[in-house]
Image (cartoon, rainbow, N blue to C red; front, side):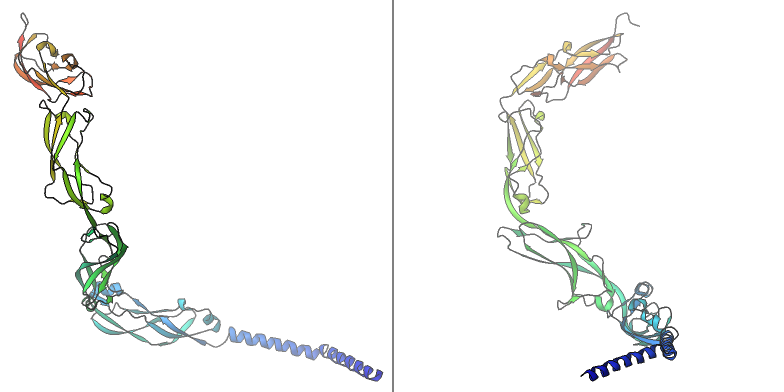
Length: 438
């Protein structure tokens, strides 16, 4: 037992001695260093100084250039809307190739040299990233189809859907407007002749859902062929790509006509109005009509009512925006009558006229005075000539003679309860030279 343990112990010591001898051997160390140097040299040669390597980039997008140039110079448009791709093999140093991605590779075809409509095969031009070269391009060509560009005008057809329309609601004609809110009925569509000839109609589709009044929505215009299939393409242009569709919704309602005096001269028991017709039928948006219980006419100028204490005027029936009158007559006749109101006359005498700026060398004599001043008084207060201002200004008169002028009476103080319905009256007077004046 002890002999076995000693043998094992001697073997372990022997192995340690051998390992120590190996690692302390100068030849072994040189071998390790040589291996590491060889490994570094191989890495340098393969990564830095290696021969040219190759790398394949699949499905690289091909850009179609100069569509606008083709259109402006030849009036041709690209018809084919395919997504063009190609496979490209690049060569270069491996380190450089490893840094290349798809965004660094430019592949394109140029339409600017085409001059005729038809199918054309164009060579793909590849611009490789710096430090690389193009080995192969597959496919090397793409096929494009170009056609003459034309423009046609199509009526815009509203395609409106809705639900839950109340039975007393009426739909009006759809109104289509552009982005500046200008009403339009048609649109101009331009593009390849082959594509434009497929268009059967242009529709403005809107689904309003449940509606309880006039509604409006913005929508794109849709091109449809004869079978109702949608026509799309980057080469088709519309003068208005989107529009606003307004769906008017109407209800009818009979509303009374109302009128009031412009001021507050008379109380309700002093003035009455008779309106013919007294009611009108209108149609309009339910939201607007629900808030109206009458149509207000322009107020009556109560101070225009004269000594007969009654006046009749015609008033235009003006409706709020969004409403329409259903009768041909668009005016109403209003008769305003006064009651419990005084109407009396004031007699004007020469003494009640104040003369201003009479020339010193002249005398004045009144010959004819339209002496009736009408006063409408809605109060119990008495109004006399002392309350009236009458003046005659002679500052512009310098020669003798007979003159007739109009005087405008007014209250000396503002009277809210009274007015003078007639603006002026005539006065005839004579200017004579004073005795002894030169």
